[in-house]
Amino acid sequence: MPALNPERITRKALSPSKILVTGMSGLIGGLAGRSLAESHEVTALGRREVEGFPTTVTDIGDGIDGIMPALENVDTVIHMAASRGNVTDETHIKANINGVYNLFEACRISGVKRIVAASSGAVVAGYEQEEPFRSMVHDPDFVMPVPRPLVAIGDPVRLRGFYTVSKMFTENLGQMYSAQYDMSVICIRVGKVEIEDVPLNARNASVWCSHRDIVRMIDKAVHAPDDLKYAVVFACSDNPTRYRDIDHAKEVLGFVPQESAADHGF
Image (cartoon, rainbow, N blue to C red):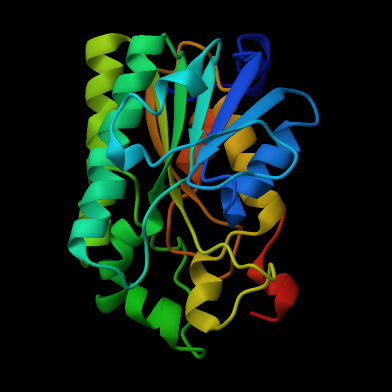
């Protein structure tokens, strides 16, 4: 995909009038939704009410009917709701496969122009078992090669568990909806965003993404050029031991992280 210069990004950026955020009761959805609400009309969709925001309460895994009322006059959907952690495969299937399909299909029917969807950097976490990435992440005495080894968006994934399988479903479904229905779908492979906004350990420091950087990334995706129909990008801060390629996000979205795990001693 050709690089987009900053002038083009500014000049042809999509200007949504109404944004729906799923998962706004969670950390990342809440950060993004509240930030965007400073300049846009923002509503929420999820399994519980979001204080201060009109909320459609529904489980996207239950079907399309409960989603449709939330999409009236919506230009852009930010999909941050997901099952994660130590849950059953059936839970991942309902939320991250059936639920994602239901949401995308409801968006298609409603004429939504753009979906910004959370994938996960965990789809490439298996590289951390291979050199040189194992040493980059875990060995404090490792001398970083120049140029730095990076896992690029186009490199094969290294899936570990059904959660990562379900996140690749989001990316693949998004590509299909973009191509078949002329929707814009931008999938963000989110790094480690912590509640306290600091890396918890050396491993997390390699994939850490600060609150401000994840909000910046989502904002860039929401306002990306209207002719950007499909993209997958990594979201990480500019960490010294980072092994995920964020240059691609700069090229297609103009995203430049402003923080680093080095600011917290890593």
